[in-house]
Amino acid sequence: MKRKYKLDEIDCANCALKLENAIKEVNGVSNAKVNYMTQKLTLEADESEFEAVEKDVLAVCRRMEPDMDVAAV
Image 1 (cartoon, rainbow, N blue to C red):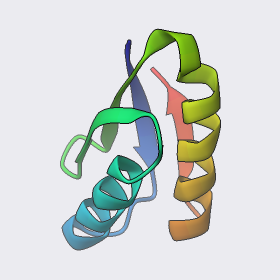
Image 2: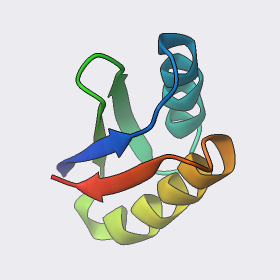
Image 3: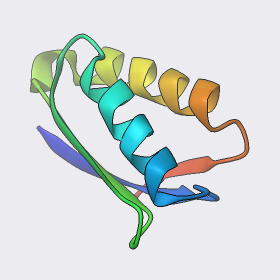
């Protein structure tokens, strides 16, 4: 399953890369891409465990970029 999210207030391209790498380390994530220019996250994970993976990914986002808002597109 693939889902896209809008990332508001991501500070720089380096922060986006660090966030992308951290998200890829979350158990259950098959792929993730953070695009700094469009301020979007594309997340891929198995559909049967997507809710749990999404919850973990959002926790990583809050921990790494506390001022950033994440909203499903």
